[in-house]
Length: 309
Image 1 (spheres, helix red, strand yellow):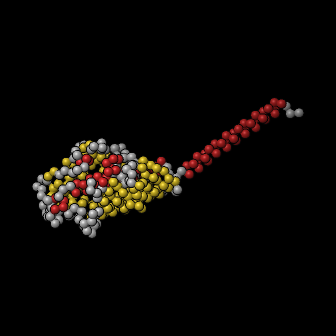
Image 2: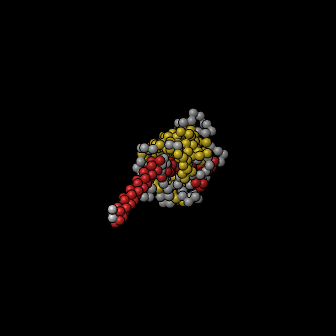
């Protein structure tokens, strides 16, 4: 006859072994579950950050272009040669972003009515706050060559210690008029070289781009639109390289820039490709918001683009 104490000890051992097996089984199942969940995630938080960063970087350069074009359009000297002393003269621009800036034009000595040349300097000084609360510093220096918006005319924009909300913007943008005639909506080729955006924490993004842009002008300049096609490449704040291709024309609205404080597209589609990801970004149907829709491998997610990423 088997002693009762032996049976009891055996039961305890079997129970402990079973418990350990169950515990290990549960642990393995949890590990497998989380591993599968991570692999199943098609759009990660990092993807959202990559999209926001690219969109914000693009917006900063688009706004510099917008400020430059407004400056060139605001003075007859850029169209007819004009008259200005060697020391230059001040010009006024009907846009709230210029309210606390000094804008000066200097017409080149060899400027003629048929082929105007000169320089426009937008100086925001050590701190210039607009009506929307954006603070800009430094200078935007615009060199124009040819009658504004005429076929073949060119505008080169350079930045000197320029910042917006403590974010430093660098780079040179060359805008060449592609229109074959004086069309109501002129078209331009815009090339960005040496583009760089640096945030206060010293992280930075780089950008080079080659685009075609149509300027859809309205009776009231606040209703103007830019229709943009082309591509860009660079690195984001995390040092990840990317390329970007516009697959459906991007639409930028000046009125939306005034409302949102960020000069970003509000319509159109582009594809952003990183080292191991491809993301389709849809800017919507033209509403003045900061929402973009990301799609990757069939998964879709809405993301709000902030101006500080």
